[in-house]
Image 1 (cartoon, helix red, strand yellow):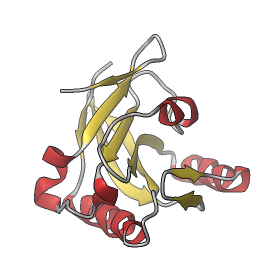
Image 2: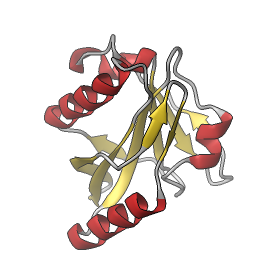
Image 3: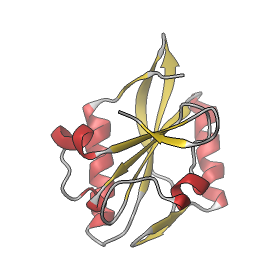
Image 4: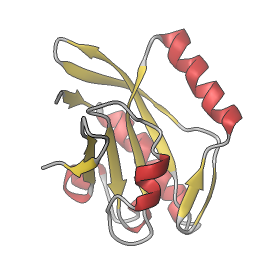
Length: 144
């Protein structure tokens, strides 16, 4: 199922600020966009930055951070609409991204920004980001 995803500018700004802070340390980073479905679209309400260990070409979210995320989702009755993360060079969905994706429902979104998002601004976010959608066959496919 494809849904229109509505993302407030402030969420994009917060996303870039967090990703770029890690990028200046030459570290990947992941953030999650939380939202809810409404009349055939998904409205992003907030950004969730999980506790994570990360380096030049990896990130890992420990179990206690995932538990904190699930508690947040239950308490606020939200869903993880998308994961947004960086790569050191080009934007693509790696085998590790495929295997360790946080979002696993059909139609889930995984957004990847190149060069640790250091060259991306709110106005270039859509152009710079590679967007992948999880298919019903559990494969990440690049979206137009």
